Amino acid sequence: MEQLMIEVKNMCKNFGPTKALHNVDVKFYRGQIRGLVGENGSGKSTITSIIAGMQKATSGEIFYKGEPWNPGSMVEAQKAGISMVLQEANTISNCTIAENIFAGRFDEFSKFGFVNMKKVNEEAQRILDSFNISHIKALDNINQYGFEERKLVEIVRCVSEDTDVFVVDETTTALSLEGRQLLYKLIHRLKDQGKSVIFISHDMDEILEQCTHLTVLRDGEIIGHLDRNEMDMPNAEQVIRYMMVGREIGDSYYREDYDSSHSEKVALELKNVSLGAIKDFSLTLHEGEIIGFGGLSGCGMHEIGRIAFGLEKPEQGTVERNGQKITGCHEAIRSGIGYISKNRDMEALILEGSIQDNITLPSKTELSKATFISPLKEKKMADKEIEAFRIKCGDGKQWVNTLSGGNKQKVSFAKWTAKGSDVIIMDCPTRGVDIGVKQFMYELINEMKKQGKAIILISEEMSELIGMADKIIVMKDFLITKEFMRNKDLSETDMIEYMI
Ligand SMILES: Nc1ncnc2c1ncn2[C@@H]1O[C@H](COP(=O)(O)OP(=O)(O)OP(=O)(O)O)[C@@H](O)[C@H]1O
Image (cartoon, rainbow, N blue to C red):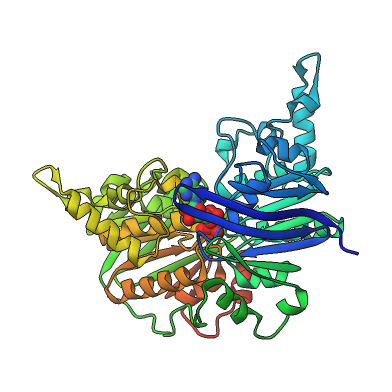
């Protein structure tokens, strides 16, 4: 007999005129991993964030273990056994790893008002070790760690023996292969212990492999629920996609050609660059070329992207475009280089700014005449991108921090298409976007190649690299371990061998 953990009844959530949820009914049982799928902005994070105490519903009810549930904060929810890993980085900067893990829970370690920090640190390291991530040290400042490690710290923070409901909101795209495996093991262990997992993802393969049940949303409404048998049907993927978007979506995502030719003209060069663990690294990117980078966590590929955009200054060597040295990102942008950061909220967007301001920001020079920026031109530029990327919003004046995760990602991409940058460094560009938009982004990347634009595609998704790149550079421990040319027989297994 299945035991009900959480029941959401007739829930509505409005943000001004936006109806984010409309009469939603959904049940989460013990011993289930229930996937929540739907297009960007369909309401997945809104449901889970209300359950996890981040915000209140406009109307409707929630029952948790049979009792009415209306948490006032995430801490309250976590103390009651419900925790959620968010899409974006959610760690506290300038604090130690241990302080991040036990934020809001110091009372568990205090006596007569004094917190026993030794115990906090020891317990944090014990937990990190139990998750097999001993390379992350409890005493280290979190600022020393990259996006993925921070996500792992968040996962550790969320899960304890008292966790009954674990919500994973589009987290896997931020993780490398190892991080994903760790998360998959964890959710299955929780399921086997009779806990309830809510798993949000746009990766259909992952959803079908990892989830035991599925709920499909469209425009804030529940379209249907599937059990494992239905998910195992041969046409399940097409059926789910149809439920999500309400129309047929083709199967083809990636480039269909295997022609890796490009211009001989060099678009960007890294010459004998060294920075930290990266030593004497060189790269030549040509016009009309897509170079992909793949590897496990800490392999150095994200750092290469940052150096190429002038965000990190190499200790030795140079980054050059058209014979000019690139020594900073302003210079990079001026010379036609764009960069989509993996760390969306911190580096790619001004959250407390409008969609229009974010999209047009790198293009201010193009939009201005004698120091005057034409508001009409700005609006036109932003509206064009909003339409092309199908950014779900009222209009361009809406603030970016009110957008769903996938829609934020579209803004982060659209900045550079609006500017028409000739070289774009893309670090996980399709992170959190739904399948329809993914298709559009891949078409766009292909179109850019044909126009002679040069692209560096850094990705945690091997299928994306195999599907799109002319050449794939595999990295491990900050070194190149293998280069693959575009080839229809190339498989993920071929690549993994050089990553591990
Ligand atoms: N604070 C807010 N103010 C205004 N609108 C909001 C706010 N938060 C969410 N919304 C809107 O609610 C709708 C649902 O957003 P939600 O984040 O739940 O979507 P999602 O299904 O999780 O999307 P994604 O896959 O892109 O993460 C979107 O249209 C979004 O713009």
